[in-house]
Length: 399
Image 1 (cartoon, helix red, strand yellow):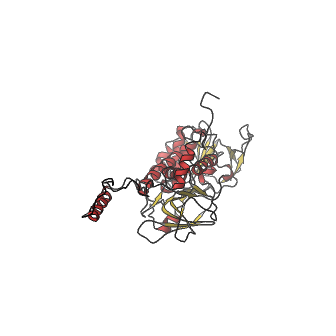
Image 2 (cartoon, rainbow, N blue to C red):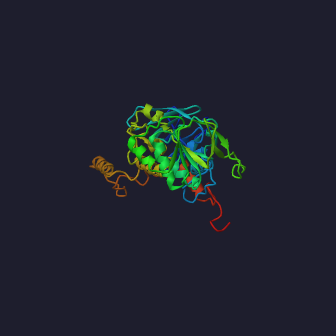
Image 3 (cartoon, rainbow, N blue to C red):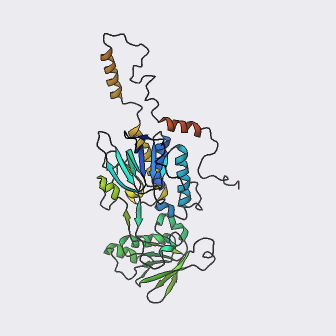
């Protein structure tokens, strides 16, 4: 998908005093839509940025991207991520196909962190966690291999594709009951599969559930089998055809949902001291900043919404927030006034340069522009190009 940074060669980023550890302004841990959006924003806003992602993120396993404006559902999560990484590198960001093992705070007045991965160590002024969460898979033989092709975890993404067909919801908690009831909006054939377990929902949910045309199946689910219809014989991996039960029966399904909860990938953030919510997500404010100064978190690791569009929005919010946190200009009014006062005090009794700026930034100030020379050179190159990375194709109606 993307090349790994060569840490033995010269980097576009700055280095520490020893010259051994690449130093970035922004490092994002996680290469899903939230993390890559954050990184693209940060890079295009003039900050040296890197992304660490070992396996492409949970989103890369998605067979078909849904509900993303202007993007065909024929596009997979892996294809979308490949385009995003190409964009990031195109604009001057770095991509490390590597898993981060530890994030530690370095001593100093300003937020500064060290990230250690299997094959690289870098420093960062700001860290963004985009580490997502993991679905708890059902304990049914052969079922997980149909993930994305009949077995689903996101109601809002995939209910549409299961409309007007026989559907199952596998689980025994309150969430399973509510998903089964919600599926009545799409089909009149809904089975709630308890898989031999006792339901864990309360009396009110039970009363509500009994008022819906949901078939409650208590028998153990033994295994899953392939679809042998025309759909199952299409190119690519097989689709789910149905489920086998402990009483020897089988039921054909168009597809269904496994509702066994999820686990947030928040260990790195917790080890750094970031506060977590009661359910284990990383707690953030409206700016997507955590309880640790200089550390942000975006996407599913903060809320588990499991939506590409929401993750992208989180990334945009965080990218803008990090930029406002890091940018040198405009200088705060208090700083400008302090500089004017210092210059006035220093020039008392001396001839004052009438051409000097009265507002604290001299025309020859070496800190202007603030973006690094390497990124500015990339800006000049990119704006002269006619073709840029990303999804392209004929306009609708012009095939």
